[in-house]
Image (cartoon, rainbow, N blue to C red; front, side, top):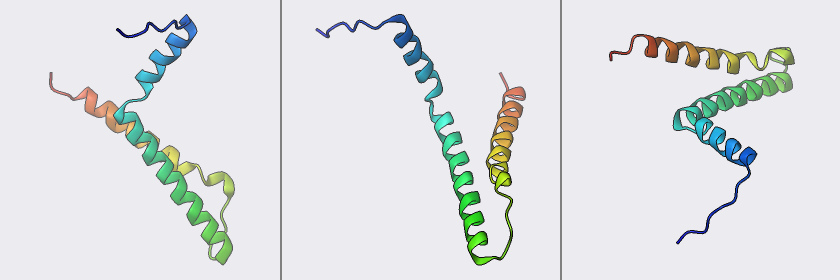
Length: 84
């Protein structure tokens, strides 16, 4: 027999929320955004060191946000025109 776990309601709610967020699709989206952010940062650092291009550091997060918007829009369109 398995021992019963005594979870308080707050921890049970946290675990339920975490299992909703921790899906395969969300993991792929987060990895894509992190990759895009990493590529933006590395491009900015290389450009800064070589003097090839001057980068405004406030603009670094725009590519990751654009990727997120594309993913959200494509998912919404796919769900909109999904055949039932």
